Image (cartoon, rainbow, N blue to C red):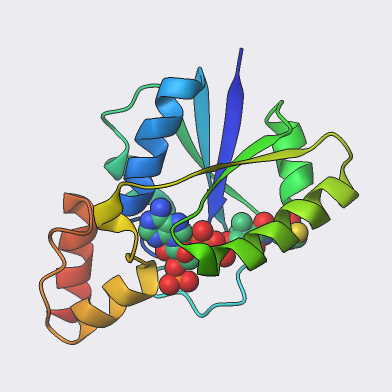
Amino acid sequence: MRRVVYPGTFDPITNGHIDLIERAVRLFDQVVVAVAADTHKAPLFDTERRLALARESVAHLPSVQVTAFSGLLVTFSATQGTDVILRGLRAVSDFEFELQLASMNRRLSPGFETLFLTPAEQYAYLSSSLVREVSRLGGDVSAFVPLPVHAALRERFG
Ligand code: COA
């Protein structure tokens, strides 16, 4: 069975993430969306809420599981029975960080592989922090996030 872990902070999950997950569903039997509990960022939504929003947003995809993780990604992936993770590359600016992450993960766990997919063009400029900011300032983010996330942002910012 081909399984892949898609890790991230998902604060909150956006349509760009969903786009990537839907691509991964076509390539793998199972996709594990791994919501990072340890984050150096100060998250808008706590882990439980990020998890719940991600779950609701992928409810239409039966081969996708959503779970929280803490500690090293390579260790978590091993518990999931895979050493393949998926990351998105939106622009050249993502590349340097992603190369560091992929190289460190492979150093920590030889045989560990990182696969990169690019999202649809309309999501190339999307990020969770932009969504949070636009929403906080009263802008309409309905085109960028799944419905449950839109509702949660409206509840938070009015
Ligand atoms: N659509 C929209 N936005 C996307 C996107 C897509 N397809 N792909 C990435 N992004 C955005 C995210 O929204 C996020 O935006 P923000 O910074 O404005 O909030 C940004 O890109 C990066 O987020 P993400 O992909 O979630 O990665 P991350 O940097 O938050 O997460 C971890 C990195 C969790 C995977 C990494 O820190 C990790 O593995 N941690 C575990 C501990 C560990 O093993 N550390 C050693 C690693 S070598």
